[in-house]
Image 1 (cartoon, helix red, strand yellow):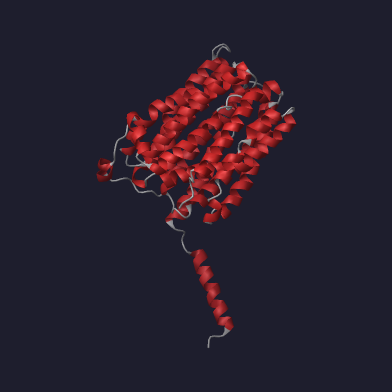
Image 2 (cartoon, helix red, strand yellow; image 1 turned 180 degrees about the horizontal axis):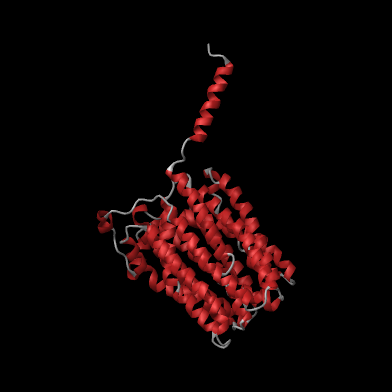
Length: 423
């Protein structure tokens, strides 16, 4: 009979060997993606988060802020399917994502030069440049999303997405707070110039991190076998794939509610409630810190299928964000929608991404991602313009309440059509 002490020693040695064992390729890839999202957060939470505020400071009218949101969507609609065809023919997704990152971040970095232009044209140059840079943005969207679906197993993917987004939220909270304080502390326009310059540096870091991923290149034979899909093929593609079709219907309504008030938030915060850059930075910090808490919590819960089935609820609860924003009477009251966005936006983001992987065939995933992106950007082009039009004919508060109703309906459609249940 083996002594109990010997059994305990053997178990301890097994645990030690398990910890010392080299991590699998999937785990290495996941860790690399966690590193890459740090650089992504440096750019998105800093310069990207304050571009609309910069436009307001430049005196841009409401319609131009609506165009800022809609123009990139229009360019993406035109470029996304040709870009999908291009990416389908590439051997390396990593190389494609790398050059897209460099081009995109370089243009954002050049926004630092805008204060040298006459104020009468600077806002229009910014909006036009942001629209054009959406072309390499298409390459980033398709290639990085495809990479996220390929780097790890189906079982580990929801947890990987949760941890990645949690890290993004944590870094974004710190960067967003620091950026807001910097913009209030440093003199204009130096404050915005240095902030935009950081986008290029962060882009280089992101490219370096992506180069560390271990993903095999696509063979020439596989490239030849892939279908090439154009804009006119989107409707048949959606129609002939029932799971993707149902997802697209529900996502259309939900995304419409998300995009409808997008151009109005900065105007409402700055002009209606008188929020400072520093306070906007604090609001973003609160939202991101709470999203970190939500993502880390979800990373544990989503390992179990019964919790993944209820992620659609977060889409429904995101209706509270524009509703509580519309009810805010002071800048301090904007803390309520910031908390709502942080807590429920986390679950909504994971739900949208993981469900897209569920409903798209793996061997044609870039094509389905492109089709999904086309539809999302069609909404992003139309909805903000309609939201701005409603705000001008009535009030911003009415437009925000309308967005809340649309979001609630979108969340209920996900439940009614049983999308994302993994059955």
